[in-house]
Image (cartoon, rainbow, N blue to C red; front, side, top):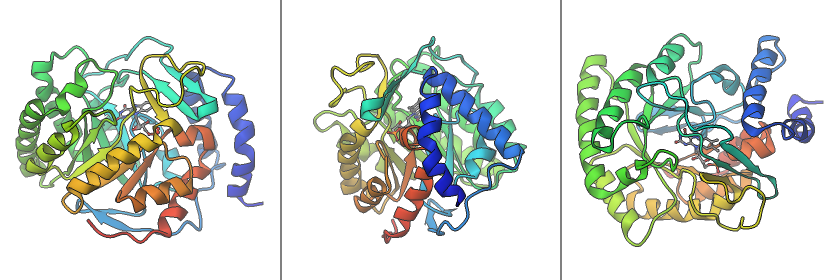
Amino acid sequence: MSTLLTGVLMYPLIRSLFFRLDPERAHELALRVARVALRAGRIPGVRGLPAVPRRLMGIDFPNPVGLAAGFDKDGDAVDVMDQLGFGFLELGTVTPRAQPGNPRPRLFRLPEHEALINRMGFNNRGAGALAERLAHSGYRGVIGVNIGKNRDTPPARAAEDYAQALGQVYRVADYVTVNLSSPNTPGLRDLQHEGALRSLLYRLNSERQRLAELHEKRVPLVVKIAPDWQGGELDATLDVLLEQHIDGIAATNTTVARPDVAGAPNADEAGGLSGRPLREQAEAVLEQVVARARGEVAIIGIGGLNSGADVARRLELGADLVQLYTGLIYHGPSLVQEAVRASASHSHRAA
Ligand SMILES: Cc1cc2nc3c(=O)[nH]c(=O)nc-3n(C[C@H](O)[C@H](O)[C@H](O)COP(=O)(O)O)c2cc1C
């Protein structure tokens, strides 16, 4: 029996065992087990996946399906993720200084909705530590590094945190995502709005210029946005992103809304909701991004991608690349291969 088929048949069993554990413990344990299996030669790697090459932001992606930020914040499982068939990995969010994040429990399952709520709060070992680990890893695929601000940095100094983190990860990143959309760092999402956004991006562009000369490479900047917008706010934000010549837009992060989950266990937990209930909201935001920015920036579609059909639709709506997170928890690693196959059947109109 093929390994893929074994994986597809086994995953429901594995999932039911892991779902008996606290979600964060289960995540840590799953990655640890996978690493041991990899070292023992028990993860054979993906064979027979179609190449779906795309050149975006000056980067050659072997396929458009990526791992979303937050799954492997500190780059502990890059070697395992490399085996699953992803075209790129986005690590982080990392902040300039290590920080513990919010108290546990801070990750919750809503199984009947194939959803998660998290309020992790950027738990990470620091941008410098991630850069060190990546510099010594054997991974040669495309790496995005997602950066954020430390919780205890006052809003007035937020730009300095981003500039510092950019410098810390610059040499190891193929692109850097500026995360302005986590709902779990107080005040972070305010940086998405016009005035604050313009001055932040101005600062980051000049820091990038300095770093590009220092390292003799230009690293593209992507901005990751929230799904929660009112009135004309999103269009105003998109205008600033275009005016500041951002290379890419990642849409979206988790939602603070609770679409269709009212009454479910854990639905009232504070934090960001991801997975299936986010899908339509993320699609609507993507459509608005595509209408305003297509052809000028690379567009990464994220949120509620649970099947090959979801991925095909997101690409059809105009995403150049996609990323997975919650779908992996509910459907297992075979979702990556399903997504890559679905992307192969879609003809990409280059940005
Ligand atoms: C537990 C958890 C932690 C996350 N951490 C981050 C993070 O550190 N930075 C970030 O930009 N997004 C983070 N995200 C958001 C995901 O990258 C993604 O944008 C969101 O979950 C929507 O995709 P999904 O429905 O496929 O999960 C996190 C999501 C989850 C579930």
